Image 1 (cartoon, rainbow, N blue to C red):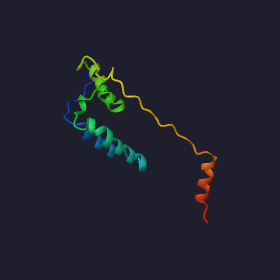
Image 2 (image 1 turned 60 degrees about the horizontal axis):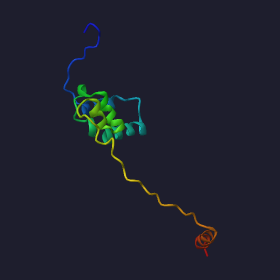
Image 3 (image 1 turned 45 degrees about the vertical axis):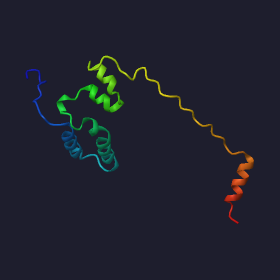
Image 4 (image 1 turned 180 degrees about the vertical axis):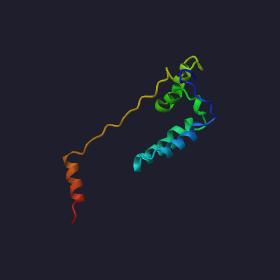
Length: 115
């Protein structure tokens, strides 16, 4: 208390806090407010909604931002190794796009020209 770092204990969850915070954003209007609401609903609340506000750690936020739950678990000493580190995704073979040649362009133009 002497140093000014004391925070009173609360059972408030992130979802309740985020809802109050969004309502307090009176200077934000229109699409910006809608974007905030949408981002909270789609991305943040599914991960943090039921978490008590005071138990959220930097690694918890990192999980939302970078989707690195396994990395955070290693950082927080919950697991020893990140099982996704040595995982390799299959190579994606992109189809080669063949632009139309002059003959094809003439045929397309003829079909598109009204008679």
